[in-house]
Image: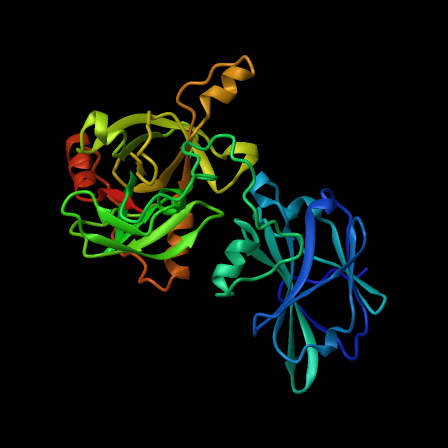
Length: 375
């Protein structure tokens, strides 16, 4: 069997059949598609639990990427587990190279034409955060990927349940959350903080904020406004490590605790979220209702995540267990990716290296805001 290297070109000629065969695990969680440069998505036909087929590859007149992806990546898992993977073109098998990192969506090949001859460039690259990250990177508008659920899965640890509420009259204050200045005039918060609102204001000064990008899958939203402050440096290129000290900053329970910034301390207690969700991590710093969208920083004041949720203690008690300070944050790498996908100039703020606690907290005061949500 031919074992091509990443980047190797295979001649397609007049290839009439293409089959992808998985020899590893979790084939039932995989889908295969061809995505054309124009954004057209062509699904492979699943002919077995671990096998997919597509007609003539040579029919694609524009650059086309062939992908495998986890259809339910919010439950964790990577395409890597499916290797070895064999690509069979007109009966000729090719053992595809496995990715060097854990990926939930893998581009296994790119079809293109050179001198009128169709070719396939073998690939093994992709996206840790799945097919949605691929769609954002390719700027696909309302993509329809096979087997991809468009409904939110039950969130056992959601801090606030906004679903199935009657819609209040326009102008009604709905509540508040927190936000982080990540670029000049750009604030990141949770998608669930703003999902029921039609108007958004910075808590102090009542400056208006306008949503410019929303990612419900990863519970993030970007808003833009004339916000005075200093963007927090994003720590997106170095991994979060288990046990590292962190601080959480936000505006919980403002009607009870006051409208000033609250800061709590803890550590990273887990590197994934519920069910192995690789987009999130666990931390122990205490939070409360209204903390959603707030900053999770390292000891130097660099943003490593966005506060998203807390374990639903009632559900845990019903199971006869006890939980304390089990909270979840969305990783800062997704914030960076979202800024890029939204076409916003990426932050150039250098990472902070001074860990004097008083100075770190003072910087937080200039970077973390409260957000009022209005119907």
